[in-house]
Length: 292
Length: 161
Image 1 (cartoon, one colour):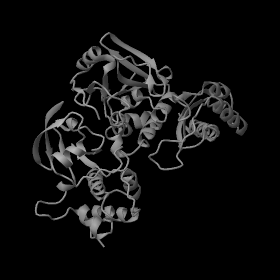
Image 2: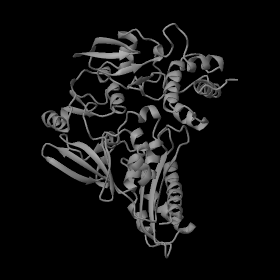
Image 3: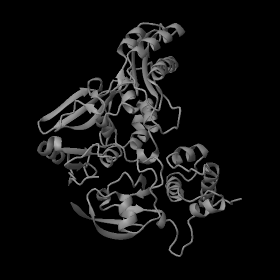
Image 4: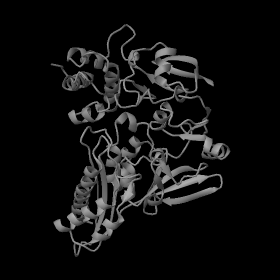
């Protein structure tokens, strides 16, 4: 690893001032579980490292105006065990619980994972299906970006060099909504998935038809994906085996996987269809089973 | 570029000057001579380098030493009593065959110690989920699970078979 200038801001303002000063030459480090590996491999060689481990704040979970707000420096472990997350967004708590291992989750942060923008990770997929937004701050002010517009390419986001991701905001789903995240792990439980899918479905209890639906996929493209064409197929429909097959077929056409040790591109595309079908069915059944 | 850092390791305070890019595992092994902690995969997967920082288990191969400035660390060297009496977890690993070739053992007993401090009554699934990040290539996982169950029972004051 190469040496670097090192800063440990204690407030968000100090961190933003350092980012403003150093811009592209600086790298922010939250948990560091991804960044340290990249620095060891010299894939990333920052002149300046700004560690956020002494920064006070940005670790709260708050319920405001029908949404949960997760501070960006919350660890995966804290997110998976937070009572508010478990109560209102059990699918998100469960997604965090199945990332890597306890030892990594003790350190890796929810905001750091999004800024890292690895298309093989699970939380972005569930957060896309939950229609999350991220808050980005700089010395010039702050802005809110829907997660659907946040990822731009492999390990690339719309974050500007002087911006810090400060929070994730997730709407609490309306009644009669079911949600699921499932992943295909042919090797080990802590591995990256061959494909991961999250789905949310809001069902009209009177008619059994889908009022709203979101489907997202991971590991099958250069960014985590929303399968919006597949979602359009589902809205207004009732759950039938034919519908599930059609949705799976439409969703897999939106994928663009690469061949690697977790499967060939063709295989991943086929499995994307299968896992969309299963995730959607699971979410739908959960929506119908929800009493209120 | 170097920094002077102060860490408490197994109750003892150390002040060392380290290059900014020094990893915690290298600081422990080469600056402090605590070679009980092992390096396996170097990418946070195998768990051999597990240590407890401020009570939580972490991968010391993914942690910069400068991040541990001011931290309280526990390593495998700090588990036994000062007179050498092994901790209940260490003794159970020997009594129940969890100690095998030895390379994963420091990480295993450190992770198991953290588990039993967080949950005194883990069931088998709790043990498997917690220990999933510690790999044993002797593949003696059943004996490791048996060792942790036995240590948990002993720590609860129950008779051990």
